[in-house]
Structure formats: structure tokens, C-alpha cells
Image 1 (cartoon, rainbow, N blue to C red):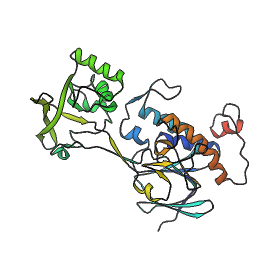
Image 2 (tube, one colour):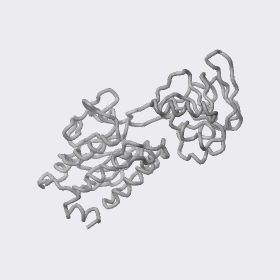
Image 3 (tube, rainbow, N blue to C red):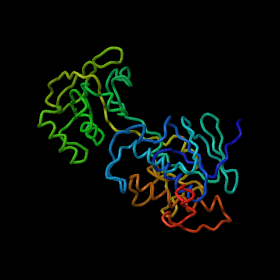
Image 4 (cartoon, rainbow, N blue to C red):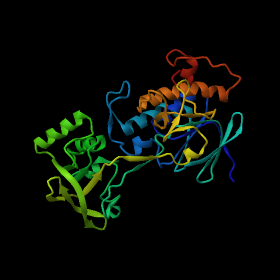
Length: 342
């Protein structure tokens, strides 16, 4: 068994909310390590839609998901957080008051006075459409996420779905694709009305095609698609030539080992209070999409707010004998020194 890595706070999840928690904890002199099951920092923003624009981050009218992650990484540079990627937390044990021993699936050990769960909705996995033989084309010509739009430049693209992801990528990839077809099983869409209207305008202008129906089969060899067979809603069949298919059937969320940590759950989420976002286990907090409480909104900005209040209580565990005085970064010279701006 390896020697434990000791830190004030261990953050589980390196998405935007976990990253901002580093900032809030760092302002209060708490050192952090972050563990994430992905091979990169940024959570869903980096893994699922790095180039997708986000419009509801305060003071940023528009920012790409990866751009937001990059800005957060720049913001937390002064605090020297350490990242442990491709690791999944399997076990959390209380060994002191306050002190936890945390074990990953590779046997890495941590000891921390505070644990912050910022793991989004847990482990996200795209829903695979029930299409025979789809597995053989995955990662080559069937993609469940868009990480580089340039990869699709000039290609014949088929997007399948009727939610926000399907419509967002239809709008974003239309100028890039050689030809784009959107396939949905019915006339009604679950996406934002503005996105639907923009999509229909592209259809009316002849810039993309819209087909109502369902995929019945794939054609192609060696993992490369050549065409998709579709049964339309009027029971006729159509043969859609394509180089790439992007099915957006939603994501499944799995809590995984979190469900075995003895923390009170509310369905597939972690129940917390709204004063400090602490779980039923003192010293363990949950912030971001993985938690729930009355009035909860699953927004990144909500997670930022939760991180700020969490840090105030975490300070009491890390420095039980130290009085915490609230300060503003705009006027506190000590905080400005920590940020390297004084």
C-alpha cells in the first residue's frame, strides 16, 4: 500500500465547479488535490462539448466550454492545485475528527480533513441507440460527442435526435459540413424554441435537410459509414449517404461508488443543506449538479455559489482554532497577495 498523499481538501471532480472550488478554498489558505475519472481537466465541458458556446456565465456574454475551463485554470494558478486524472474514488473512510482516508481504483491513497464531491451527475455515459452493428462504427464514424469541429469539415453528416445537443450541433456544424441532415422521429422537438426556429430557417434556405423517421440500419465497412437506412414516418424508406453519424439520445448518469459511501441520497443525487452544502456526513460536501436541495437549479453559476459557501464551513474543519474574517478580493491586500496582484 502506497504512502497517503496528505492535503487539506480532496475534491472529487475537475469540472468547472470543482475548479472554482480550488479558488474559493485557496483564498482561505486551504490546499487542494483533485481526482477525476477522465483523462483531462474540465469535466463534461472538456469531454462532451468543448467547442459548444455557453451564454449564461456572468460577465461573459459568450464563451466556449473549453474556454471557460481554460479561464478557470488560469484563475486558480496561484493556488497550485494538484490533479490526479484517470482515477476513480472507490472508498472513503473516516479515520479522525476531522480526517478521511480516500482510496482510488488504482490503490492511490489520500488523507484529507475535508472531501468535496463535485462530480457532476456522477459518471456520464451516452445512450447508445438500438441500431444493429453500431458498435463497429463507434469512434471512427459514429460519434457521441464533438471535440473538434474541424474533424467534420467537408463531410456528409447525419445528426440524430431532437434535444438541445442535437439542435446545437446542427447549428454549429452546418457551416462546416459538406452536407448535413438532421433526423428526428417526430415533428416536435425538445430543444430550445430559438434553436428549433434557426434550424427550420436553414431547412427552408436549403442549407440542411430535415428527415422525420428512425434509423433501421448502417452501411459501411471497417468502421467507416457509407450510408444510413431510414424508415420515414410515412413508412417509406430513404437511403442517406453520410461519412459520420452523431446520435444524441441523451446521457445516462451513474453514481457509481458514491452510492456506497454512506451518504444520504435523494434518488440519484446527494442531499445537502443550503447553508454550507454539506452532506449527511460532516466534513463531506457536495456541490454542482451532483447535489440536490429545494429550489436547486442545475447551472454552472449555481455551483460557483455553492463552492463559495462550502469553503466557509470547510475552513472550520481545516483550521478549527482560527477565526475566519470575511474579506473582499477588491479591497483585501492579503487576498491580493495570494492572487499575485499586489
